[in-house]
Image (tube, rainbow, N blue to C red):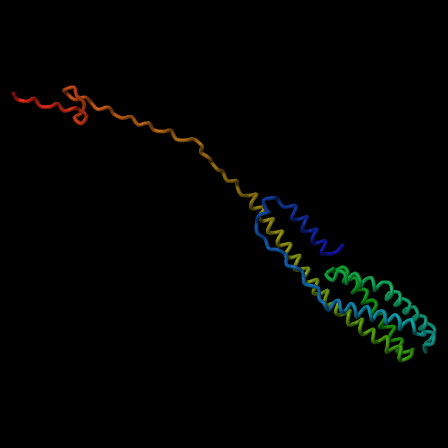
Length: 234
């Protein structure tokens, strides 16, 4: 399983386990992964070309005519067969997988591990070719060995950077989940707020007008009494 797929599964499982109350807090987003280096694609092209040429060079060698004892020739032939199987069967598939997913750590480490083993055997075989075989066979194979070693180192540096980037993403994911868990715990511990709604209307006050008190002569108040005209003198 690829590491980035594992990160996605971890994120989904952890986030799904959080209570619904933790959906609203603002949390940092994950940084985007680094863009694929264009040099990696070029390095893989160089590696594929060098591997193909090394296989041709090994196939054209006449190991049985080397100036060495029988045991050394037998060991050299066994190494040659092993190298050709790797160069034609294992290595092309590993290159293709890493080319298709340059951010896949698993694919990168598989290719890098294979290159380390391939380089060790090829270096020993090239040294034997220089010691017991024709000079031109050694020079042709040594040139391809240098290319394979150069690409091997470049892929190692790329994997180191990719590992650091993936570790940063994992730390950001842990921080994000921890923040959401803290927000969920705080929301669960807070007492619910009580809202009191008063839907009763206050009673309306009725105002009673006071009746005016009658005066002594039986009339109402001066303001409401009708004035009598004065009697005319005869």
